Length: 274
Length: 317
View (cartoon, chains in turn purple, blue):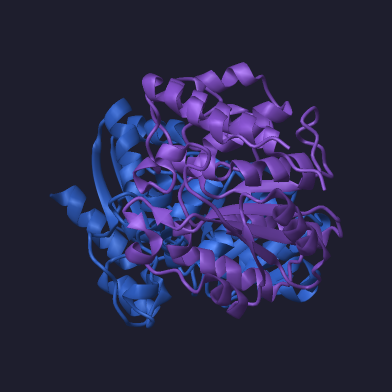
């Protein structure tokens, strides 16, 4: 089966470079999700970077707007806009807002989001619209694990299974960390699988850095009838840059220009092409 | 000016609900979203006619606003209705980000506005909803004066707008007095009655009470003009400034806190453009309570007698 480690590597590189240029932003989660984004955009999503508003496209809703750098890097890398533009991240008049904003006209962006706990509801609305119209396209929503502490997410989880939206697939970035520290210390989330199951979802736990396992999970989700699927992707915050991996202090920090050089070197040495 | 006659009392929520059903007859993009109180907020007319386009979302308003956003991003025109207290406050962050920041065409029915909700008491009487929503960019706020106007407001909101719209309406049967064929422009106040002493700018069913108050005052030889401010955002600045220039005194009347609602909106326009003396009639920074609608409207001097009394007192001071 085809994997996308080279693409994930490039995405991580762009994430680091754009964050260092911006001087602020969320490094840990953006690096941790690079494999998920590479697999989704290069294998799973039916989309066309040359026609971002293509009517039949699958849609990806990024609920955790703070990992915008990995979305922007992926969109640029897949051809939605020039990679050069990543240098404008978080700057005045940029289309690359700190948290995604549709107002600014970035192609490929489905939703302005960043206040946690809202994206899954919006994705559910999209999935319901497609049900009404008997469209076969799918909606994906990427959530953070800490985000699941917002009660509104569970309203959406409840409603999605009630309405049997099998055209909806949620992905939880289960890196186990949030700003104050490990999720299980800040506010316990386990057992995450049984909680989603109890709410009527089809649950697939997966290693969020294993492309074959991720592709398998997405394909299982596509086949599941009458239930929405959640892929709980176990990830490592900061993945690819050894010195910051699993360090929650890197949730909301950007590398300095000096650190960038070191991080890129670490990224290079951890790189696994295949 | 017209002599306004009550065609028969009717709740504005019924006008809203019938309006949604009527709009949906012509437009299959309309999707209804219910939060358990579907009948109470008038959405049952739609839900019964178009069950395949109605989704029950349970008592979960935050999710409902997000779902509405997702539908609007999919070429649908969602209508979500619940009590104003829940729509504006429980789901405020979803309104701010998922709806307003994304600037999506969603129609939100804010039911049970004001103290005329009655016996349910303070928890269910929306008195701060306008204050909260008026500050949100991209939002339009409509506050029709009767059931007929509520019906028309829904058609206009569906056909003419492309942004979030909050339509505010009440629970009780109130005078239904405007014409089915009236000229109704979003953002343009309607002059309901002319006068010379002052102008009262009212919204919602207090327009009827203001007209009745004008009749009471007319019997004492005080002629006051009545302006129906059915659109609270964007507010009709020109009409407000014109009224201030013509009358020199402005009164506002609303079933809402005087802070943040119509009274504030008018004061903002006047203080920047043409400052005149103002009296703001409404809830004076306090919660409502239980009682019949009639008792409460009298106690808080929001009925015709109360409004006339407050104005009389003010101009004699």
